[in-house]
Amino acid sequence: MTLVWVEGLVSRNPVQRRGLFLGVLAQRAAVRHGSVLLTLDHDLDVLPQAGRRITVNELAYHVGDLAGRLAAAGLRAGDHLVVYKRPNFDSWILGTAAARVGAVPVMLSPALDAPTVAALMRRLGRPRLLTDAAKLQLLAGEDLDTLAESVITVADLAGLEDSPGIRPVFTGLDEPAMITHTSGTTGLPKLVVHTARTMRTRLRPQLFMLGVMPRRETVAISIPFVHSRLFAAMALVLTKGMPTLLVNDQSPDAVAKFFVKNRPGLIEALPNSFLAWEELVDDPRRPFASVKYFSSTFDAIHPRTVRRLLDSSRRRAPQFFQIYGQSEVGPAVGRPYYRRHAREMDGRCVGFALPGSARVRVVSQNDAPVGEDNPGFIEVRWDGIAKTYLGEQDRYDENVHDGWWRTGDVGYRTRAGCLHMLDREIDTIPGVGSVLEIEDAVLDRLTELVELAVVPGPDATAVPIVCTRDDQPVDPDRWRQATTDYPQLTAPVHLPLAQLPRTATLKTRRVELSRILHDKLQEQS
Image (cartoon, rainbow, N blue to C red; front, side, top):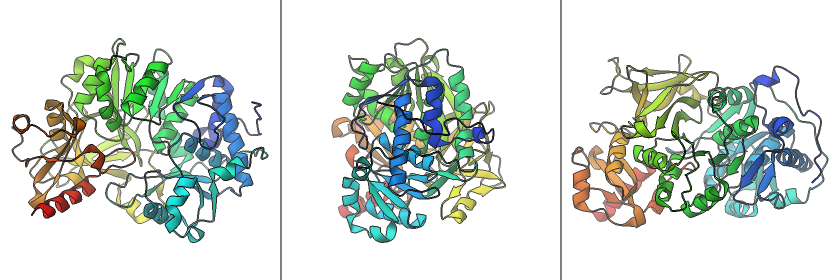
């Protein structure tokens, strides 16, 4: 492969260095780390000949190549380009290529259904759409002529090979640079607008943590390829020149084979991915033996999962690092867990302020002092908070209080300064205490459970929805023994794991689950 570099490889403008400019990220990394390898467990849809082992040099070439193809397809600086295709790492490549053109990539999860995608495109005001044949068929019932300025397919890009390269376009530090969306746990997702400044700010605490690692590790990343966290993770590994494994097939057996072959030293994955991988702890292939660091964000992670993963490592003093944050905020607080501490782990203790990170406060809901029995609103303040919700400034402004961003979670701080996140505000059940704390405890006691969600039932009762290994029924005696501390729980309702409503990041959609429960109970009455 001949690498063709276009002008603008390295900016000498100090203002630009204060932002994360996606369009030149790979090329800047290639200057110092060009031979570092990215290993995929899948082929790229848009570049099927690229193979599954790609150097940073080759990655930089592919970004420039696809930027030229997108420009030839009509993409221009200032356009919104919706990337909506099947899950694949080429979504990240296409997003950064669009940014190189000066367009704003709008990364939509392939898990979204057609009506949701159509609603988000209306909010964007006739963006350009980049998709594939399967998603185009899914959108067949929508009026794409009205919704989109133009439609570019993966096949279209294949026919534009050898398009001329283009110079990168740098947007302003505080101008929209990328748009992702919220999980949509309570309805239609919101479109979160990120800027070069906010994206760069979010890297500060993580760059510090990577900087204190005694040696460079191979990093395995198992995060949706359109999520803002994936863009941050890629910026980190490219900047630090860390060999990277990119996971698409999250099934336990596929993950085991991939990790045994490539032996990561650090894994970042979704909490529910780690939960699903618990069964690999006893796998004779020992897929986690090489792992020194586990890392997770997005959602609460259960102490049982942390303990089992740490026990599966054969490295000296392995760590599980938990980060608390959200799409609008980035990383807010975090903390490591070690084997010797994990036995007493409190899953509600989500961490302490990180070096270079956000300020966090907890505000009373009722003017009474905030504490474990009177949790308050968790709020965050720093320059890493997303710029706005596109087309919904009022909804964005509702979360801002005297310059502080209200996360929607409730909790308290201990005297030692640890932030305890008890629940999402919308998920609290009066008289129940922390739903997440109950779930942590019961999952600890019943290893046959692979997921547990306590949701409001009739008359605001607390109904546990249980998913079990191999969908086997829960033994009533074991359930009673495990829940004796929680008399507020009703009898459990069993649901196959495959039927559990989830977001693209595998969070349980509790509002939807509560609705399913009500429908199920009405059918039985």
